[in-house]
Amino acid sequence: MIVIAVIAVLLGLLLTGVQATRLAAARTQCANNLSQMGLGLYRHLDTNANPPGASQMEGAMTVILQQQHKNVFQCPLVDPSQISYGYNTCLDRLQRGEDGGRIVAMDAACVTVPFSSANSAIWSKRVDARHKGVMNVLFFDGHVEALSPGQIDPYDSTNGSTNATTYWKPVSGCADNIDNCGGGGGMSYYYDTLDWTGPYFTRKDTTLHCPFGGQFFGIPYSSPNPNNSKPASFAMKGRIIVDRADVYTFWMAADDYGYFDINGSNVLTWYGGTNGWTYYQPSAPMTLYAGQSVDFQLRQANTGWGPAHISIMWSSTTSPTQSIIPAANIYP
Image (tube, rainbow, N blue to C red; front, side, top):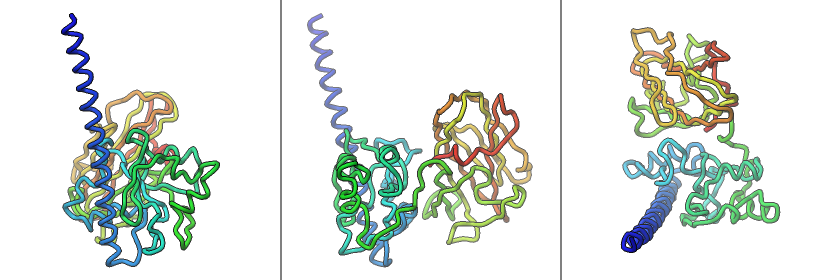
């Protein structure tokens, strides 16, 4: 029994050491990701007057870094379906020679991190001190530091104003009114390819009901993709916050191909075309409780000649009629 006890203690120490090593490696890889973004940003500045906007940062870096970008936007400690990094909402106003000490990107749970248009409660939900209480932070001069949220908190009751001026606000000023977090929609990615790869355009879409239009849904068609007359494929990621406990069913209609995942599992697949995309197909019913947050990913590929369409609606036991999921229930 003594020998078994000693072995158990040694195994415990070994596992603790392995876990610590894994976490240290993840933190290093995460810091390397941000360093690569910093290098890509400077390559971008060699041919452009200004940095990309916060919501366009990852798309622009995908073009610049090409094959190197594969895992740059993915912290090893974050599920691939979730956002790993957030960007200064005034990123596009930063200037070389003036704003080297300003923040470009950091560990965060949302693509934008506002420094003056939010409050302390929102800030605490945006940032993600996932590396044992600290975050990796990329500065505009290219260096990366591990900092606690309090060290750069622009809403701190004592040092908030100083932090905002020192770390966030460009010398030339900025309104800081671009916020792609909170309710009101999910983050969408538009591609010229059919397999959701390569350069993309991103924006916040407020609905899962035909996000980029279609005459049959009563929403005028328009493409946000500057590289093509219409996007070849589309992906939207985010969370749906449930208002009340109930048994819910999700419904999909699409043209041509559609996929809808909940919490990483596919719940709806649509093969459109000639089989009538206007008819909604239901998912299996699922029980959700009030306030529950479910992760979703909606993907669509357009192989046809005309505008693409996709729609996700929901119903529940107490509200059996299919209805549009309200924008207030959709979060990036």
